[in-house]
Amino acid sequence: MTSIQDMFSDPQAVTTYTEGPPRFVPGYNSMLSMATILLAERAREDARILVLGAGGGLELKTFAQAQPAWRFDGVDPSAAMLALARKTLGPLASRAHLHQGYIDDAPQGPFDGASCLLTLHFVDVTERRRIASEIRRRLKPGAPFVVAHLSAPDGEEERPRWLSRYSAFLAFSGVEPDKAAAARDAVTNHLDILTPAQDEAVLRDAGFAEPTLFYTGFTFRGWVAYA
Image (tube, rainbow, N blue to C red; front, side):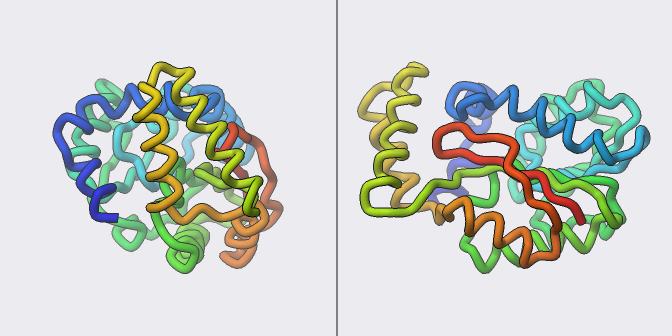
């Protein structure tokens, strides 16, 4: 995990971060649009939204542009990534209170909704359960939680097949073939990828109801669930 932490503090990586997700996560921009819609289904017009893993600011900007009265608490361990989030938000930054740290550093709420996008695959299943429980504890009853990250079927043949497809997608998006293969190896060797069923179980174990799949992009999946 040290290399991942280094990546999010490396000045060059931070500078170019916002170019990455739209290119390297299948359907990324549409996933953000869907996440906004799912939050807005139950969150009030002047909602307060918790965004865990807010570094970079891409989802914050999407949410803020779509909902002009929403306010946000964004949490991320990287000071450099939070600085990038402020830059990404530009004039919208006044509506976001950014906190350096982890879920334990987030305000207690209660929040009208929460998101955690492209983050939970960096931690193991025990920590995921704890994080999900802490998010649930900070939400109003019935509030929506939108989560998306790497999630793939298990099996000696099926998971490698999906990871190879992801590597091919990276190459299709313009990544050099050797770097696309290296990215596949990094995902395989350094990230704790659960199966979709295990990811849904994490949400249920944390007290969330009705975890429903809303997004699939090769090895990425997203769910909405309710406190």
